[in-house]
Amino acid sequence: MDADLRSIQEARDLVARATEAQQAFARADQATVDRIVRAMGDAASRAAEPLARMAVDETGMGVYEHKVLKNRFSSDILLEYILPLQTVGIVGEDRARKVKELAVPMGVVAAIIPTTNPTSTAIYKALICVKARNAIVMSPHPRATRCVLESARIMHEAAVAAGAPAGLISCMTTPTLDGTHELMAHDRTAIILATGGKDLVKAAYSAGKPAYGVGPGNVPAIIERTADVARAVAHIVDGKTFDAGVLCSSEQSAIVDAPVERAAREAFRREKAHFCSPGEKRLLERAMIPPGGKGINTAIVGQSPHAIAKLAGFAIAPDAKLLVVELTAVGREEPLSREKMSPVLGFYVEDGWEACCRRAIELLHLGGVGHSLVLHSRDEKVIHEFFSEKPAFRISVNTNSALGAVGYTTGFAPAMTLGPGAWGGSSTSDNITPLHLINIKRLGEEIRAYHDPLRDTAPARGAGSAAAAPGWTDVAQRAAANAAPLAAAEVQGIVERFLAEIRSVPR
Image 1 (cartoon, rainbow, N blue to C red):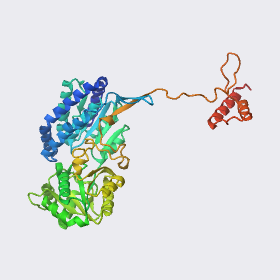
Image 2: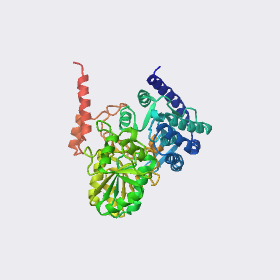
Image 3: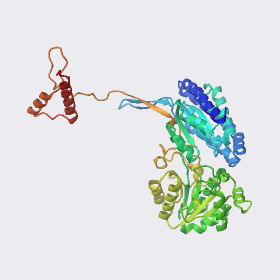
Image 4: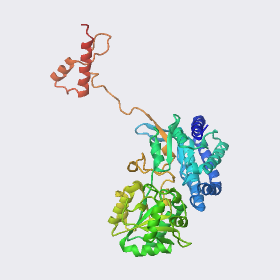
């Protein structure tokens, strides 16, 4: 059997096992669910370091220390947020309107795991799925299979030891495109959590199932003239270099207000940024943009600035943290204005926050509308304008975007899947939590009686018979008595019954 057929059969087998496990787990009470989720999170946290090492070694991307932090973010910080959530039983009640809301799990979740953040995404998705009493089947990127399998194994063992049914958490060992499609389109798959490239997310939305997907970021970082420039630059460098720039929420271009340009350049240099010469910029473009001009060369994703510069054909200082390229336009004219997923940062200068804003909107529409934006400013009016008007659903202020948008340095819901909303082609603009993975069943009691307006006006058909349906005589009688005219729907019903009676007369 070839790899595609093995992958398809494995997807079917895992979904069947997950379905059985989930049906048993659906009866668990909140205390049982929380005990299992805590055990999973604690096990993932203890394994944060070896899982990070596996992820770096297998994918060849990112920074070990930063992957450790991401793993603990997806276990420890996520646990703090989700454990208090009510996901079992009555989750809402409106006594005045006599409505109760009951949490109902969705079923089996197909989870697509990317190569850029494999172990942290696996931990995060497993925890939010199980918290909502769902089962999860993961399909990892082929270049991240071993580390995702290990993440799933650790959490599955912890869950079973805490009382979960076997098969609740699983991972494909032979992920192929055909197998992943089978997983997403399977009759027993209830919903898809898709994190990955644009084509994969599009495939998830085309699988015929509800799906939450995360698209590209291309996050602009604005340094407005009232900002603490040194602090703003430090934040941008931290965000752009975190895990070698693989988070979709990381800064892609800095937009500097003209009056603080000189201070910003000096601050970037103090932070060990290498400003590329025009010649180095051209070399970078050739190295980073594949033939055809679409996307980014995957060989540079998550690599160090030194590796990227070497690939491009030039050298940088040993202590350089990132490469900065000066840009003047957005789009085809400046190919590095797109999302770069590496420690390469675009640099624009615009005069005034309005001009900075226009440039930011251009960047978002190039590939990241609805996702994220970060603003460095101390002007509350400017902050409000960006919040109310800009086409991004996560606007972080005076922090780094890479970790602000996911909820590490901000109060946003901790998440590794960030919806870009309808603007970005998604069904949600939220950071995805367990509450996105439950259905709500509602119970409603009568709060106002219904009185048929025709019941009291209809004449009887005779002794012991049911009341006759109103006919043309009733209309005339009501008109003669100066009664209120019949509504259009009532008249239509009378006409339909009259025509039916005519058609029923023998000829």
